[in-house]
Image (cartoon, rainbow, N blue to C red; front, side, top):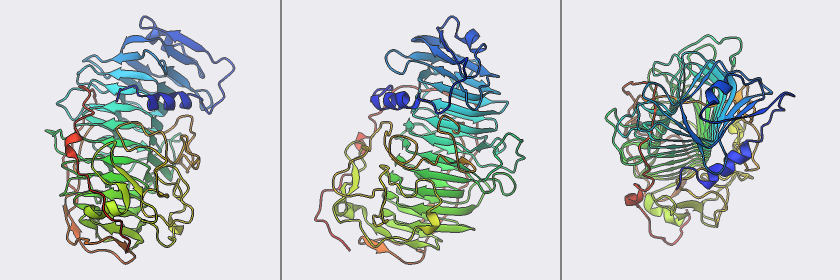
Length: 540
């Protein structure tokens, strides 16, 4: 895989067709390393600063304001030789202060081994920001607190889309470690986060806050979809981390009824932790989870950092792991659902779950009876269903129908009458995205999938032209699991909650405000192969 892979370029080219109409005076302003920072200060709403190929020392976006229908864009070439922004030890590589309606696209952002973030927002709020189609690399190999995209101030309506983040300390870190700088109403989609030391992505818990007049008043949605989150074997001196962690929302006031919608993602491999840990209000559907640590659940729903589980919908996911598939170590106070999942694990589900039904569960060894190529091996694994293997009675999805793209599978295919278990609503040959270390260019949502146009965000709608998404630095740990029970055969689960126990999470806090990358080690996973020999398909 090359940093500027073809999928990223296709996505970048497609998404540069903005959804706003530029103002009459909008201009393309060519720039090079000698004049780019001076020209940036002169841009008017609707203008685009076009960086020529070359090497640029830092990019500071301070007090730059577009308008809702006339964004200011800073872009490098979408194809060919890149514009490379390089770091200095003094400062983050791309730094945002007090800016709005600004897009940063098609850049290579290289921290050159320095202890600085690739993209960082701090001190004063920046809202309605788009970070798209960039490659972030050159992070130091020994510091988890160095981040690809990091927000250390209150932000809202960010979109982080189609970026490749290589071997960061932490890939994307949104919100402050103390919970006092919330990340609100964002979209994080179609990113590849490869081999970070800590989290691929974390969104921090949020304390109660007072919303300013121009902030989303809520309820808002933050959407995390179509991302590829992959870890390798590197240990971190700051402690092990899940691939993805989302914290709880405020207990009262603005944000208290916000929700994370996590769908269409590939979460692959974690030798020491869970793949996803979630608190607060979450909906998790049509994801593929492969290769969590055997002593952790693949998907851990748990209290964390003083925040409790309020609402947790987990449906139509495919899980292949050596420990527990889905663990609720804390009951959801408002509502729950664990419905229509395809889980191959020694302990498919555990904990206190009220609405537990219509799941197809079994052991890892039985997975080959149901899906094409069960494995923990990028590029070779294929969890698309065999003909007739994962179909059951139509499921009642009424309580889930308000979720964005609840009726679209991992590939963006319509689910029809909801008879398929797992992340795919189809059988036979997989027509969609390969499960590999590359940007996912299909799937539900606002890409090229034919899915619904609901972008989430404040009051349920976010303009696809660029609002929502952000970043951060690293902290906190995840839940440990102490589960009992096992599945000795694949079965359709239609009953009430499975009993089991999972300890809650209590992690250590850290946080910085910097980021960078060391090299390219896309290969380090090939020694992890757990391929199951094909077996006679059996249905129960």
